Length: 411
Image (cartoon, rainbow, N blue to C red; front, side, top):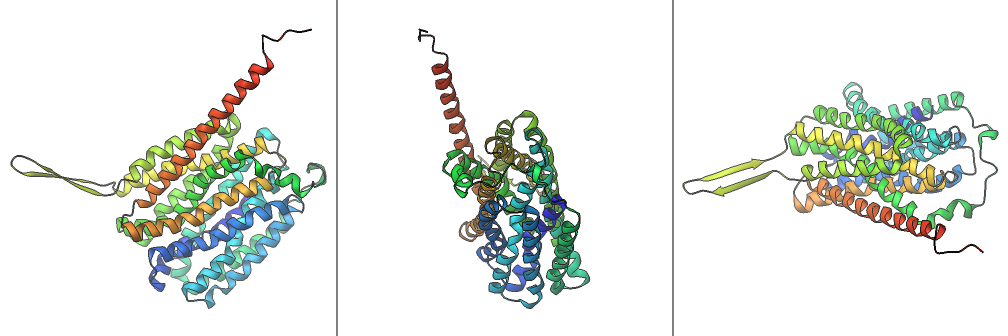
C-alpha cells in the first residue's frame, strides 16, 4: 500500500514533465522559464522533506501520509482556473507537497523489517518512482479524450481515491514494532553534524536528483535535439523511467547481499562512462588533405543515446537503493530525520538541475550541456567518496594498531 500511494504521489510530483511541451508552446516559454516551471513542484517537495521527516519520528506516519495526500488534492482541482506562467508556478509549488510522500513512506515501512531485509524493502518501495510513468502515459490520453482543462481534476480524483484506500487498507504500525518512545529533538538532529550524512546527501543528489531532473527534461530534449514527435518522446522517456524504477528493487537486494558501498562505487563508474559519451555534442570535423578536404560528422543517434540513457537509469536505480541502505546501516534510529535530510538534498537536485540545464542551453546553445553538468556533479561525488573511503581505512588501521600494539607489555 505504501508503494502504491508513493507511486500516485510521484506521478503528481512529476506531472509537469508530461505537460512541459504543451506548456512551453501555450505560454511561449524560454529554456530558463521551462526549467523554473519544471522545478517548482520539486523544490517544495525537497524543502518539506526534512521537517516532515522529523514529524515522522514523533507522530503516526499513516496519519501524516493521509493528511499529505488530502492537501495535494486542493491545488490539483484548481488547475482548470489557471492560464499564466506565474499561476502555473504557484500551483506547481503547492502540488510539490506530494514529494514528501517518499520520506513518510520510508519511515512507515522501516519498523516492519529487520536490518538485513531493509534494503530490499526500501528498494521495492522506491520502485514507486515508476509513478512518473503514469504522468507520461495519462497526460496525452486525458488531453486527447477530454481536453487540457481536465488533467488537474483527474489527478485530484486519483489522489483522493488513493487516500481513501490507504486509510481503509494500510495497517497502522503496532506499538510493539516501534523502537521505544520518541526521543528528544536533539537526538534526531545530532547526526546532522557528521560529515558522512552530507556525503550520503551528495550521492543522493546525483542518483536521485539527476534521475528526477532527467524525467522532467527528457521529453523536450527528445523533441528539440532529435526532432521526435511528442508521443515518441514520451515513450522513450517512459522507457527510461520504468527501467530505472524497477532496478531500484533489485538494487536494494544487491545492497543487502554485497554491501551498499560496493554497489554505489560500481554505479558511479558505470554512469561516468556513459555520461562521457552523452556529453559529446554533434561535431563536424574537417581534415585538410593533400588533394581534398575530408569531413567527419560525429553524433549519437537516438537509439545509441537512449541505450546509454537506460544504462544510466538502471545504475541510478541501484544507487538510490544503496544510499538508503547505507543510511539504515549507519543510522537505524534516525531514518526519519537523516532519511529526510538526504531525501531533501536529493530532491534539491531535481529542482536545481533543470534550471541549470535551461540556463546552460540558453547561454551555450548546446543541448548536451546538461550531460556535461551531470558529468561534473558525478566527478565530485566520486572524489568525495574516494577520499572518504581512504580516510576511513586510515582510521581503521590506526585503531587496529592501537588495539594490537605488540610493543605494549602486560604488567
